[in-house]
Structure formats: structure tokens, C-alpha cells
Length: 97
Image (tube, rainbow, N blue to C red; front, side, top):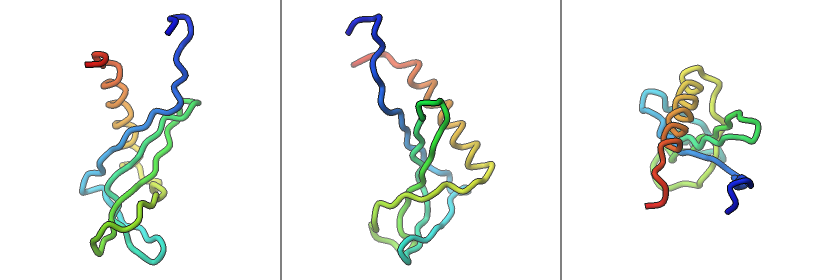
């Protein structure tokens, strides 16, 4: 690839484990879920978007359903810290192994 033409990166996303103390429950289709994972995306304008995923509280696999991340300062801090950490990891990459 020519160095004067930057590659077209269409998506940057990371998965983040929600620490036990920050987990919450939400209900979808009559089933309660414990939210344990965030999927954080870097949007083209530089802002972040996040969705939460988890497992049914009653057990089992359940459906792969996304949930809104509540507007809580500690979750916003987790998302920001995870994005900073991911950026540092990407910046320090060592190329294809």
C-alpha cells in the first residue's frame, strides 16, 4: 500500500469486562440479564459509543441482546479508561508476528 494513501479503517471496537462491583441487571423480553461486558466503539468523530451484553440472571445462554449503558459516572470512567488502554496497546503494536 502506498504510504501517501492512508488505509480506510471502518471500525475500531473493544470488549471490556465490567468489574463485579459495577455490574447491573436489566430486563429484555421478560427475562432479566446481568450485564458483564461492554462493547465500546470509536466513532468517526472521535467520540465513543458503548453497548452492554450479559447473561440471563436465571442461568443458561439466553439471546445475544444489547442493552443501553446506564448514565453512571463510574461506567463512563470505565469506558474512558478502557479506550485509553486500548489506544496505548494499539500504539505499541509490533506488527504481524
